[in-house]
Image (cartoon, rainbow, N blue to C red; front, side):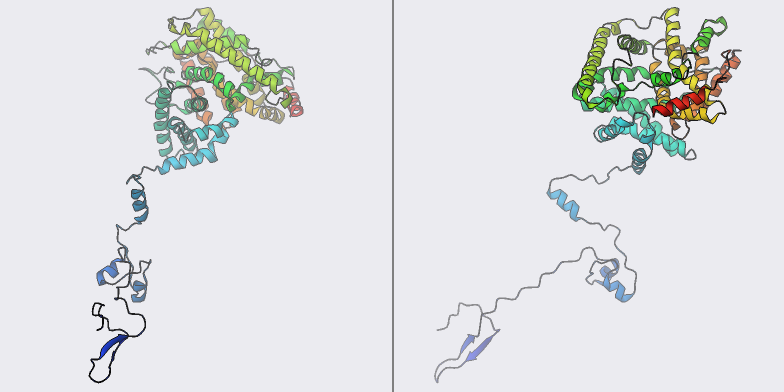
Length: 512
């Protein structure tokens, strides 16, 4: 008997007859066929609207072959998207934000920072490191974007979006910067803080928001108490004093800053041609002692909190009294054979900074709001004048029609730019309070300071100082005119009778 348990199949099967009297049987030739299966296919779920409407399979091309053949428009569904990445991410347990926040404006600002802005800033050796830190710290990224926005605003004044974004980012930077000061000071964190502090100083140069709504506090008098350029310096100095020992111990690009002393470089260049870099000190001190100039802006009613700025001033004086500036540190181009000496001098600087900050900790808890004596005010004023007198000498050379004079100041361009940039940081303590109270003697100096900046700083490269120098020179002159005070120093204003400009140019050319 044939096996009837086998599945009944008819493909390749024939009927075979036996001999007479036997029943014919079914026999299969070859391999028995398996049951037929439906051919696998992929169901179209992303077909075009025309194929869906006709209920035909769409090959999901764009345009699909069916629409091309029928010569009709191939329209894709609005909700269509590639879901495979989302499926893969879901299976991997990754949460996908359905509305990621990507600011195209911020991308534009960062691109401008990288391509244009950072090359215009002083201390070029630190900005590569600072930029890398920005990918890990929100406060420094905000600072970078703010400065880039200010730069773009100066290039595109017709568009308000850059200035608006820059101001918002500046407020965010200062808020986050203050919050992060309480974190432990590691090398990476200190580099981020120090880089942000330097950028905040650039922001303060650009920011003229204190002039919005008028320059006064209820009158036509110029009120500088809200000008943050001279009142954020205390924070920058305190960060520097706390971070520098860590930079020296662990090695940081920021230690290269201590090798730079632009004021001494300018003074040396002036002395080599027989110029006195301090020749503007005496005329300003004559104004200081003149009773006619010992007036304040009586309309300034805001309380000036001088505790932090006087603490920073004491730190600065302590450092200046213990260091011999030029001889205490090696030049930046010192040979590798002097490597041990460089390290020893850096360690000496570290110990000095640590000693100063430790010594002054107890003093920081004292009542620093007590007004200093008139003699200490005079001494502080003279220190500031001595610091800036070399720049006024350069401005006197640059104001002549002699092309050699312009070339001479061009050779000192980097030092001049750095000294202008850092000047407000040195103006903590008594001089900052003179500015806040509208002291006429401080205003006379600021007039000449901004006048020199306008003459010496290239507007395109030093975009951060261009607008402020022009605006503040005009406003301060107007204020002093209203007080009946002359800005003249009773000397040949920014002129040089001798042919020293040619000597300076030749001397500098020989140095390079």
